[in-house]
Image (tube, rainbow, N blue to C red; front, side, top):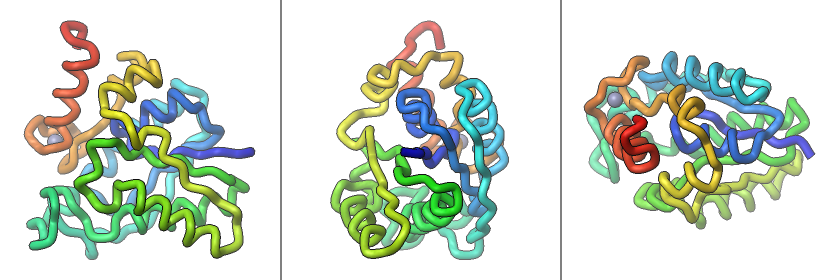
Amino acid sequence: MNRAVLLSGGMDSTCIAHWKRPKFAITINYGQRAAAGEIRASKAICEALGIEHIIVQADISSLGSGDMAGLPPSNSAPATEWWPYRNQFLITVAAMKCHALGIQELMFGTLKSDSFHTDGTGPFFQSVNHLLGLQEGELQITTPAIDLTAKELIEVSRTPLEILAWSHSCHVHEISCGFCRGCEKHFNTMGKAFGHQY
Ligand SMILES: [Zn+2]
């Protein structure tokens, strides 16, 4: 069975790539402000892990909101980086590519701590799987880290610092800004996982 990971180049999807070693990694340039940094990180991670890297261009920047789109967050945003229906869109675009590549399993890097985003929860992914199952293609979405914290995922996946050092978590720029929620989570998690080495 061919498998792929949806690879943003952030810590969580990087750990899943290292842990599960799928044949393919799919990175989507959807017009997010950090796209160039995410693509650069994903490319380096795939080269290091021997995973075939696929980049898909699907610009929806005109439909975004929040930090990642360079716009003010909407009134219903649970966090400043919230982008309406983003995960649903990313899964659909990746599913189209999976169909073309003959992939049956797409792994998505959501964590226990992502549950404040409704589109990062178990019920959301169960519903997406149900929806995909109503259609041709026989693709399944799996979430190997949904019951783990970021630190637990690093431990379970045994992802070393030399791989995670490539990861890019900034929400607002292709070079880490050091101030956004993505950068803050990155530094906190790396500090907890690697302590003085980092
Ligand atoms: Zn940042």
